Image 1 (cartoon, one colour):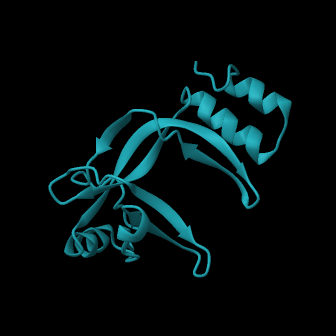
Image 2 (cartoon, rainbow, N blue to C red):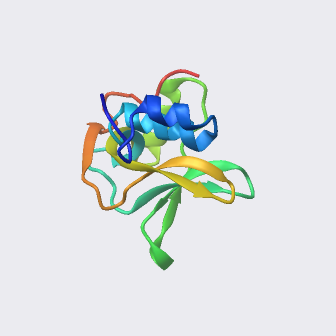
Length: 137
């Protein structure tokens, strides 16, 4: 049985019913490790300095690739079909896969969510070739 911040999932749930407690319990169930989407090249290499971010004006999630003045943007396909999304993303030079990384519960003015620990090692679950992020909607 895993823990997060030294507490089990049952302990987190017994302390309260807030979103923070529930997310902490979910992290405890996975021993503080969480799966996140990862951005990959078509050859399966993890794209460095890629971050999945929310654009407030549109409410859409996009990938910021790079940093500063050299940053570019990749908007993943919104097609209903996983195969179509995968093909659309590939035509832009990317594939979305799955990574596993140490995580924490982040509290912000907009809410509470699970966030990756930037300095923790990354385990690649799917480099985009298995299609874990391309299920039909």
